[in-house]
Image (cartoon, rainbow, N blue to C red; front, side, top):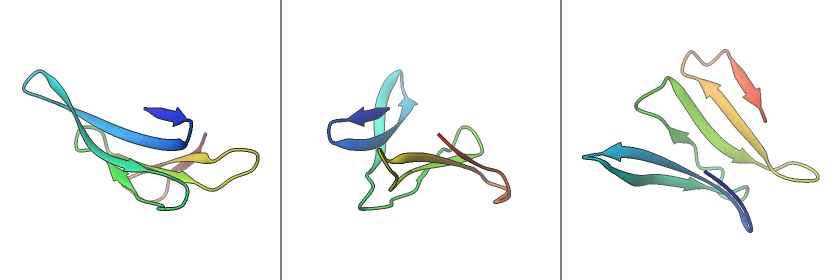
Length: 66
């Protein structure tokens, strides 16, 4: 989930029929959120005019900026 006010990125995981937050990233913290379901990690990186969402495959080669 991406929240623009203030900019943050939060990853949720479905456990026992309920969504549970497993982490939050903002441009200042540079926390990397790692999915246990798909082979991807996510982080909110500084950018202009807004932060970028960086998605990285576990292979470390493929990276996408959104």
